[in-house]
Image 1 (cartoon, rainbow, N blue to C red):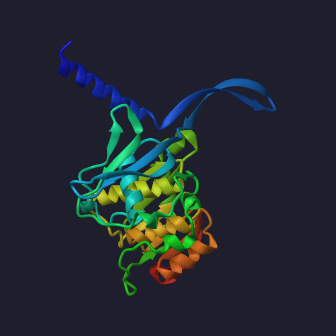
Image 2 (image 1 turned 135 degrees about the horizontal axis):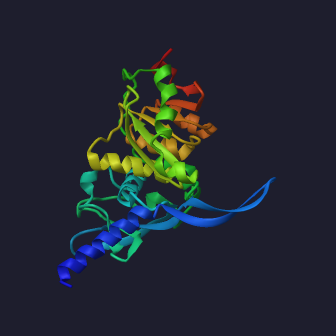
Image 3 (image 1 turned 90 degrees about the vertical axis):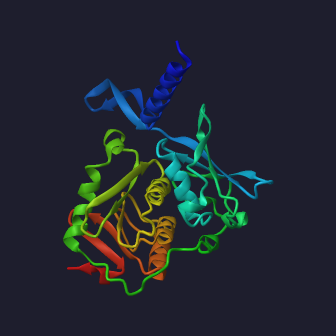
Length: 296
């Protein structure tokens, strides 16, 4: 077989494996009042992703591990870029030197983002333990105060963003129709981006809610759409402090969540002039701040 042919086959198998790696099939036992039966089940895959950055002057480049997060494989480049952006390591896609790359062709659980030589940042600002839980990205931070040091998108206190309650009601159904992996596993969070007319622009899924949002923001960085100050963000679960912080960094002014917000998330939304909606389901929702952007 010709070398070129072999390389093409290897690439096809690698891409195919990556496309299939977000779910895993299992043989299980289903127990009910009617008895015991054999069945097949599909689970969302959870694997560690080590994010590294390469930075420094041309003569003294440094590669540093900055995070390990448990994620669902797929959209790892977007996840890495979104993470660096929402952590304040980069302020634009232009500071990255090309696209993030897997560390080796045989290790897709380690990704390296190379920064341009003139990018200067304080690595100490991260104040993050090396391991980050998939369910709570803020848990690894040394202090909540460290989160507030990140530069957020410019605030426009007198923006004219308006949407209707009817448009907000429609968001969960639109999201549900596009959650492909969730339909088969029931085990993923989603972050979805809409325009002000409730048109779905992007939706990303992950086993970790903060990963899903980093993937979404990373995808918009790559498309040049950030800041997202004319968009609506929908979260498939609860609205935590860290998710609101990430939204603020990206410039998002309207955040809706199917679940409940935390008290600290509400405080952050008030601080950054974000309209925060919770318990969005069955044609009802609560508004915790920013009512001026909703037309009833």
